Length: 266
Image 1 (cartoon, rainbow, N blue to C red):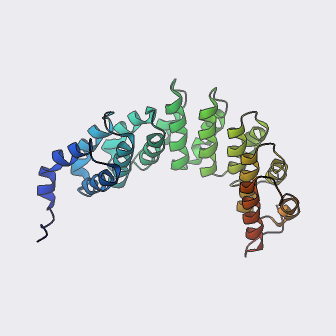
Image 2: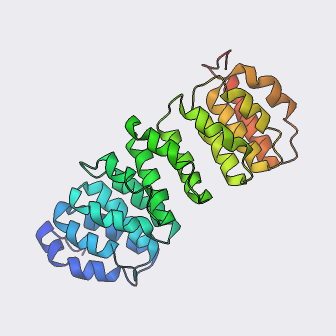
Image 3: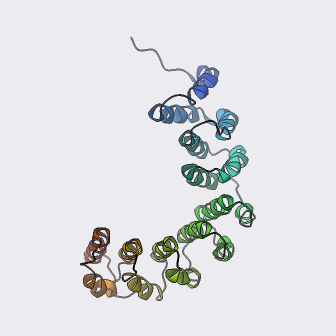
């Protein structure tokens, strides 16, 4: 006979046992445990905050905890999530900013003030949060952050700028299409795909001849997003690109042009 599910009061009493199990259970067990705990609501937020800060927990578990705190949406978790911005684990560096952006009452100025932080992960994460918040008032700070000394931070800033499209952003992103850093070139191409400006199309078409296949691929996908019929001749001319991933991206872009809504102008 199956046992009856725990009621909320009993689940709260068992909470220490559930949390302790996160230290040794495998990933496929930890994920539902964390989300079941989060279903108990704001009452568990202080304990989840403590475990988010517990570096002895596997990073993926702490990522689930960050996601759960976002789902609960209790502003008390804000400081714990800010502390997590400097975590060395790449997954938590993504999940913590996304969760932080969902905290009630989080002011974009708080994140702007972290952009000069001496820790590159904090600067990068602050940029991601600003992108998720999507407040146009934060754009000047993000444009300035493109001058960051660390290319890893600049990469995250370019991602953030795609979240709040603004025609003035094009001026700041276009120079990165000529960057010696390959990762910045392909992320710039991706960001340009979300921006509406007549200067974007020529830059993306030029990028189809970039020496790096990843840049060419992202340029093709950016052209797919734009669905400009003016790109068709260049896409057809590059359809035999030596890299299979570029050919796939170009095929997708050409298919998008054939779908309803493809435009005749850039």
